Length: 551
Image (cartoon, rainbow, N blue to C red; front, side, top):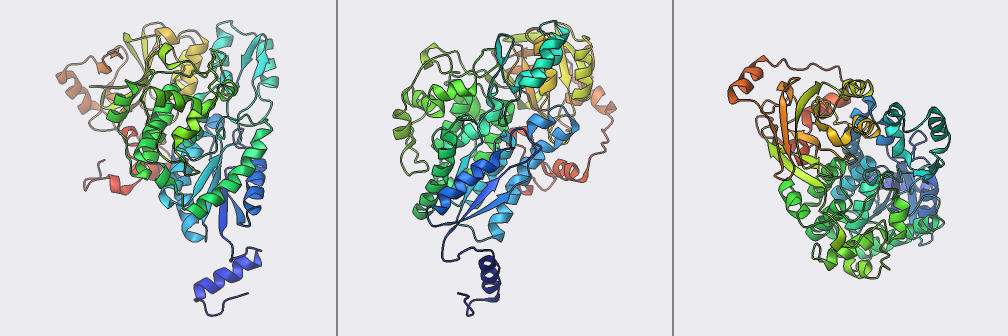
């Protein structure tokens, strides 16, 4: 029944929504999905959305579906299009904010797989602060190539593997045919699954929603239960910011560290935490990592996959160990209003190859490093190599670096410097996954360092230093003055990285720097003008800048 005594605004809204079959006497859940037929990660999410919708409708709520724009890192890795991945993260957060303001919505369910999209959804959910839950579409199956199980990320190493003779053309043809059997996240990558795992650690997903395989029968039930549960959250006014407390954010960071972390996950954590009002800094992360061991190692090299992690207890099993060893108190309340501790302690912990007892594990590989080359900090990983001193080989893009690596022009002792990949300088901050993975395939990774102002993966045995701040192009940085033949020293034990130049040499080179002129599109230019440095989460918020336009 139309309410003619309502304001004109309310009347037109009522007229429009009732024409669409939406009952205004009921509360409404918006189902935001990243379904995208050109994204291997996000294709297939419509099935999950259907399950969520059935759950919402079963509780006598309205359920409406919106599609959010997204750009999958998996599709764009190494390409110019990857410059748009980080800008799209903030764009997604903006769209969530706008949709919430423009529509009569009581709560949300966010459905996506790839880490950048989920991070943008998390940022948006924290901003609007309406009851929200997250669920992904699961991971791809592993494939058997020869006698070795492989996941999607193994494809990035094929160039190096082929050149080093570790695989044949026949193996490569089989990989092309068999590597992707279904849609979903890469099963051999923590980074690809990191944002969903972070959402679960925060208490914003049902148990296993981040790790249950795509083809598992349980995922259909998880989708339905997610729809039911969000209606309960609406009734009980359980909002994202009431769940993502300071202790919840700290626990999520510790879970990330325990799983090996990545530069992408750290930047996303900083950005999401800022939206919760519980900001974290490099100093916080450096402090926590000193107490958190690595207890999960997802990789093709180690033959451990997300499905193994899920079977061993998943995110809650990790949190259970973190609580037992004093890295989290677990008292923060999650989606059902109960403490995380209660859920984690009920997990049937199944130690095995996927999750090791905390006493047996080495320290988290993440390092926050400083020095004249990273005055504001950089993200590095210490796996097999602790110290490195080498000769700079400088490249102005990852395409140039990849060409040199593929041509076998990089040798042991080289420090591969890849610049102009920072958030403002790229613009967009690409992930330099292809150069690093090609070095892995060539078995050179343990003897070569990679240094970049872009994002980096944690897959190398040798030192990899990414998100260098100040990035190339910043007046107070040194990335733009490095030359071939310069000596670079990395000490991950002392968390230092230095370019071996005198103050006089630095000043001379600074005077000779010619600013880079790009031909970037309008969206990238706007991003470059507003984005904060990596150590502040690459957020696009004018409030971050001072009167001089400096962060």
